[in-house]
Amino acid sequence: MSLPHTGDARALGPQLGAGREADVYGYGDAAVLKLYRPGFGGHRNETTALRSLDGHGVAPKLVEVVDCDGRTGLVVERLAGPDMLTHLRRRPWHVYAVARSLAEAHLAVHGVQAPAELADLREVLAARVRDAALPQHLLDFATRLLDGLPDGDRLCHGDYHPGNVLHAQDRTTVIDWGAATRGVAEADHARTLLLLRWAIPAERDMLIGRLERALHRGPPERLSGAPVTPS
Image: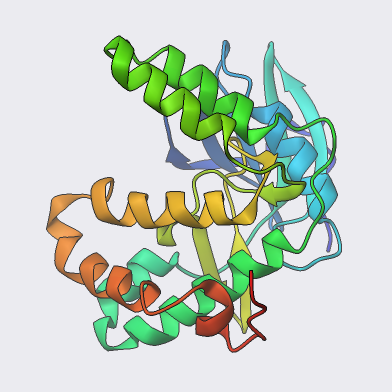
């Protein structure tokens, strides 16, 4: 993979996308630059996760981390092909194939031991519960549930949904690792089901509903064809 030197400003291409935390630009022919906005720290999680996934084939290759006028930028491999949400809109009859690919990629992610530098998922969830301004009885209930969750050392994406999974040239790749944590795989899978049910734009509800039902047919192991071990 031929990549430009990060000091070459001429390599910076057009803006390809923008999110709450970062902007994405083309960077030469083989890379993109994900430029985080000041005040957001997701680049730390993303850098750690991408380095731990190097060689597993399920995430873009991290080339280097750069500083651009005080903003942290991640130079990563440029990937071709649409995300799976776009693919599903274009070919809704592929819903079960998309569900299988999502499950297979999620299993591959959970097969990676999370680096110790990533935050513990239970601690992240506990902080979110405390910040949610819940009534005391709900806060106590949620805290008891969290205290009862098992420890885990799996790499968890934290925002795994079809819009963050690309498929092209027989390769499925997971992007946007700013919410990565260390925890139990089942919690990451459960969050995906919640995202599909509640967080996808309304105009896509019909397609996502089909995908959700496909994923509800069983755990990722069953959808992917991998052996299912008893818990």
